[in-house]
Image (cartoon, rainbow, N blue to C red; front, side, top):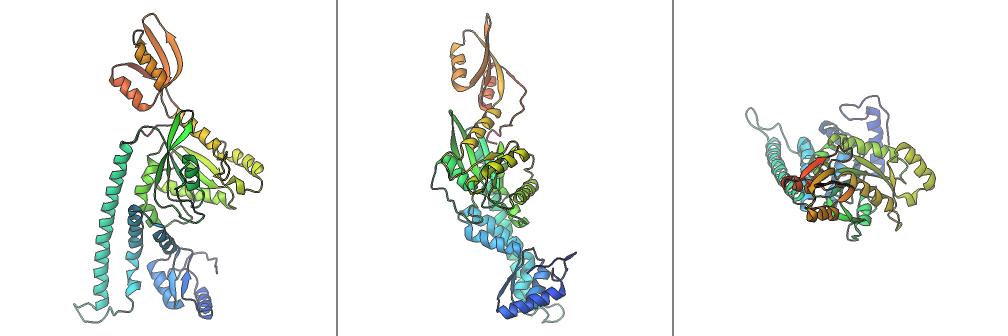
Length: 389
């Protein structure tokens, strides 16, 4: 059932007449549960349960329930429990309406209110404990990132069930990565090193999917996980090309990324599931008009991710600084090492020194500077490499 209203009813969200209509439908069907595709305030939820004489769940509660069944790792369970408790805390009164809160007299409290206060205190303590544990997880992630080998780092972001895990599995060739055709199949951040070909590698991270009207409790709880996206050199925005509302889903993801302060990250649109698009050629032409940098992929074909690997190689090259290195003619071993470790773009031989224009990883540039080698960086317009930070 649906209703168009100019402004929500503060007491019940929907109008009084619609409440009566829903109540009649609930009674006729013998329903025990009513789900609202909107977020209800604690007062609205309590009023609706009383008027409808049935259990009422709102959109955030349904999503939290789905998340709780999908959480596999310790970190994901911590995040989901935190979101659930923050959702539950202001709604506790609904849980205790069967107990009296007016018995007693002046200066005394009834058993219901006493229990409410006890539960609120326990929940607040648990919330603080969960936040502390997630802070520890965040520090652990930072330490892991700091210890990683410097290489291109990209994060897969997108609407839930857009095919992010499928792309990671296709890129890495690791078939143990869970891929399921359902909402929020992936809650845990998963990182794999990927061979891009031509001697280049990249680190690709899968993240939790987004959804329309994502509960703010979840966004806050999953910040530690999404720090991987913040540390990435670029984001790969995976879009389900076969979905009829793919444009709307893209806007949802862009809004959530803005909430997470990730809107300024370099981003490449990846239109996935092209095998399920009725007219792939026409769709690809339209997409490239709207998004000139877009890549089309299909994990159902063996050659479906070749364009993506090619684009990742380009990003890898863009993220490596191009420098001029001046060396004495006698430093033949170091010159040979630069040819071996970097990509030499030019060379000028003088009487006493050799000047090489070479593309290197950031850590290699810093090592040369630390060893006293004359290094001049050229102005770059590509990616800023995260350097494992």
